[in-house]
Image (cartoon, rainbow, N blue to C red; front, side):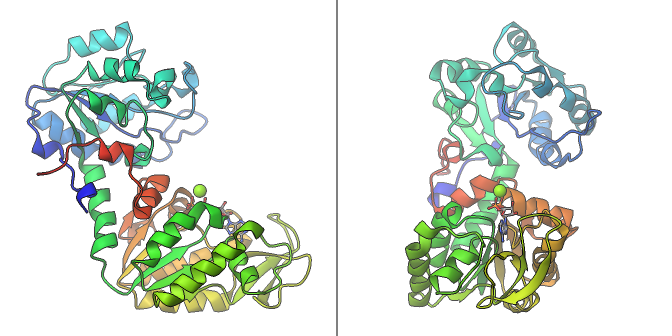
Length: 398
Ligand code: ADP
Ligand code: MG
């Protein structure tokens, strides 16, 4: 628990100080340059507003896309400026570089309550390499570092962790909220605690599954990875996804679940298709009746009912990974039904994972979930109990 107990902007004197704030402004744009989802910017405003109100001199930094250490004008942060200025109700200026002359001049002339932004930190090769020389130059702009980019806090980059070697570091409200919610779910969950894990591969989720087995009451496995478990149980799974080097592990996981008295649910029926394609022919098949040549693409209606029933009585639900190939409508019904069950339940519902969050949003249930984590990979690593460099670099509360 100690790991999550970090100082926030409220625990440090920011008055008149230069504050470097790491945000996640990696927002999506349409073809004419409008932001199509402003959530990441909106969620940074509470921290920025606090800093403005407390007379800090604010320097925002963020990455956008993957320029791989080179200047790529199409990945400039400049197109975020009109929206950020609008929501802060004040003009935000952007430097034309990250640590060059333009950034230095803007930082030198910063006044209390003023906000400026540096260019995309990933234009500098030192960012992702967490190069100390680059981190030191970045840190030299400020007296205090505020990390509020939860989505990149599992990366040891210069602007997410490296700078904290040179100036005191605390978190903003967004990270504080993530640590509180995920921490509570892990340490004091309302029971029964149900975890739903889907997505393509068991190998992506092993750490999370094993860590969760110590905490939860029910484990629901869906998505592509369910077929490795079915295969380990001796079912024929046709052409369904299967990681044959993970069969022993699947067996271990099922044995551990039994030993720890965790209820273990996998699909009892499936939507199967004759090929992996959006327009494939499909039908419903019980899990022990998948014909040769066909593949499992989604959970079937009986499984959706079974999972819904487990969710109905839950106190807490953590969900990661779609239960089928939810990008394609024919194979999104299982994910839809489970999202609907979660929306209707009284359980405290936490969605972690990039694709899971996207499905819940697309299906229109986002506002009915208790918490959608802003960090896909970061939320999983936190649950797994791994150290997140962007969190462990922050000052610990006494
Ligand atoms: P998240 O980003 O939420 O952690 P993942 O990236 O692990 O989720 O998994 C999402 C992917 O899993 C999606 O692209 C989806 O199409 C795929 N998937 C789900 N079910 C199946 C299946 N039965 N067969 C193949 N792929 C699947
Ligand atoms: Mg994903």
